[in-house]
Length: 271
Image (cartoon, rainbow, N blue to C red; front, side):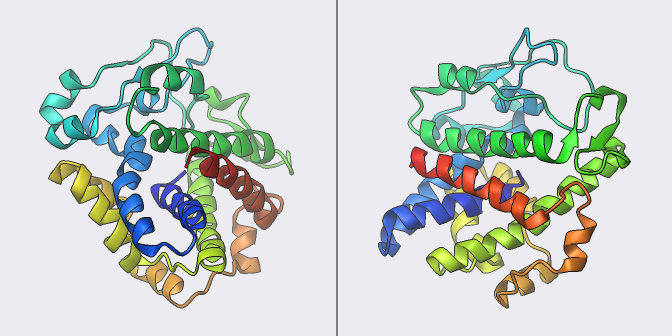
């Protein structure tokens, strides 16, 4: 999932759990969102996503792993010291591919159960697992992924290469974020526009991360002016023309509903 989706799902479920406690929501969100996003953010310091996402090797004989830093250690990290201060292991046997391998939740648990923000980190893992399952089971056949060939499930006459699939996933996630913002607004009243992300997400990152890591992480979250205006105007409906562009989903809205209902349920269980 893109970082904005992780943040939106967490915000929706946390707001639901805390009901009308606005101050409690703000405090918990700002304290916890840096760790919900950390598996993606920490790549700015340590590199390969296989480690921070506990990916099995293609032959399933190995799993990469990482012991996420404590809040105190995280704040004191630099790009130069992260490799030494964060325990991690990159398994051997990965092949170049546009999509990642399966995440081992057991391996994540084994290395991070004692972390103060274990549940927040686990939210990220679970949300990504939900997207990976929907991608593989509902959208594209990944059997020939190392040949850079992906067949669309609902229309097997459509074959994409890795570059085309990357574009399709990015479009699916962007349309999905807009749709999710509508769900969040409907259930909580929150408007997740650029100002909201500046106030809550950026503030949280600045509080928990080293300055350069916070800035570099937020660089990939920041809205385009067009997206910001769309969210501000509460234009959450995905047009028929936008739906047709996402060729990997037979029914975009039904697929998003499937993904977000599952990811929301797992998120709420970790709160």
